[in-house]
Length: 319
Image (cartoon, rainbow, N blue to C red; front, side, top):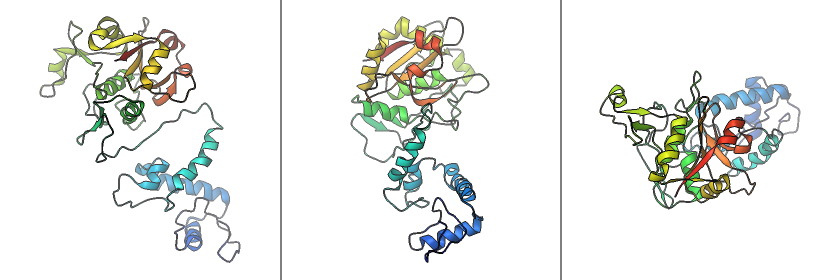
């Protein structure tokens, strides 16, 4: 800011236009800057960022879309700006900054409105719960692809699962990682579950029984980790509709919305599993989503940190 409506220098700055209301943008924005003591550009940038953090990102408004449209509040209270195109306009500047850091992994948070009309092939559960549930237990997914397969439908299923550090279901903890749980959740929501529980002494999937205790369930079946998932797919996957394919075939299948996974049996330790997700960019890369030592909703196989995984991964698609 720096100037009042007469063009006089005020000695105060409001770099983000905080509280610059439509009917009095200069006077109300200046009043905010004075209240906060933003008498230098540096103070205005840092102080404004702290204000946005405290009033928006820490209040689950952690994207431009949520700041502008406030999807969790039907009346729209708390919107950051009144300009209908504000979020799109900000993206142009933010994109330039992201381009300065090509190694940065972007995470996309896309709101899904429960009462909206389902897309063709999708259905929505009103009683869904995706977070705060032990990885041993099945979730109720919000979005289920129980009909037509498409890249958009497959993306919608994958995108519903929160891979951030706010979701303890997938986040690494004390050396434990949960790629197997993420794989379980996505394939379950696609209607072609790769089981997390197998009956003891068999390769038969087991449906966890919530009416009995965990200990009682564990006397009937056991939880499986990445190595055992790789073995299960190799030995009996075809019986349940999973077929081994090349990397290129895997990406082509994912682009058609077919559930597609990559698995690696580590003979020397803990294995790993990933979801192959649609990639319509034409960049020739295999795009993946994973939980593990690092969690991300979209990444490239070629940039995976484990050379052993990249060398040994086997892909399966469900037709």
